[in-house]
Image 1: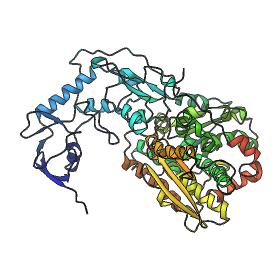
Image 2: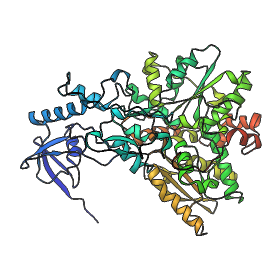
Image 3: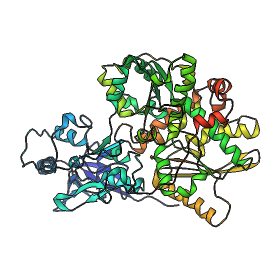
Length: 586
């Protein structure tokens, strides 16, 4: 049995005991000391790039960087004195001397780590000559905007892109004072391997990378008397939006959101969870066709994450036959809003504007990805907003969000099962699909619908599920860097004509799944991902209807409109196609 070596030290005279290898930055938190940082993020390896976290250690003449210096036994650390504070102030002023001052029109205004530190240090004037590089913004993707002149060279976006996501769309260019963040090869972001997952923007401390803001389009639509503007909200948004209004992390605010949408002026309020239930019936139907009836290649791989779809088309184009053709939940709700709902309400679909509120930046790309996203005859989803954009809209509208009453969605495309809710967490799609796949194969419901083996933040989760004596091998991967392990095992087995290692695979591009999406509130950590996921699982466990195939409104939809899962009409409206694409656009 191994034992963890502990070290004892003093931080500002206070004793602390931590495991060997714990950094001074981490140890300081245990004695309620906050050491300022800019380059360090809990998700990422410390780069020691900014130099703001410097501390003194007795017996060492150098100022050490707390983010990457392990606490050692009997160390005596000073985190704040006049020299340290003055040095940090000077470092911060030097960073600001190379940074624009257009905070009022910046996408990160009032939510910028550099801005907050400048305020905490009371910086009121420029002591150094301001030299800001004139580098144009890159808006080529229509999803993410790069503002290199606002980059502070912390390297967080590059670490997230290269190591967390294994995409390698961003890198540092040039050297010294001219160092800048840019797409690899100094090309446009749209021409790079970027999959628009937004993890670069989620980890950026400033406004150097942020989502393309589409709130003005929504305001304009809401103010147009000729438009019928409807909205839907994704599972992960409801457990993250409260962070913008002071709620504890993970608080589920579904019904307050419904009320807020009506205050904003939306004519109908739908729920993407309904689309998740629908996705499950189509996807589980696909799996049973392949697994039980041999109609199609195994493994079946989920397709509800658009950044993952982009990644697969670029990196695994040879494996498209394994991809579920089911559209993502919000696309399903979008097409049904302009067909099924429009028919029920006798509304001209050309007048309907569908707004999706998503935890994701890649959804902005997905809504126009292929002609399949126009299956209604119009663009099925017109505008996709991130959670951050919604928070800004609610504040802009002067809505007292915390005081809103609870309201219900419009049930025609709003009621959902617990399975739809857990889509927002890694493993949730797999768990929801297995609940229905088991029913489809056996004709019976599971006695226990919980699949704990696919829950949690382990990068790759592998397990076997027994369906009436038949073993189903499954894998769940989240964070694109973890995907290679799974996909390469499958590719190798296919190339060697060996049995595939899995029958069903779920992939989410963002760490933690949608709860950690690139459009969620900033400074997410694994602890926050777990709390957000808990908010979804708690709702699922409290619901009477927990399986998608038992959602009465989905059942009615098939009866009235779609006939059955995988019908010709369902394929026309609810399914899509994929193409192999090069990493770089020429």
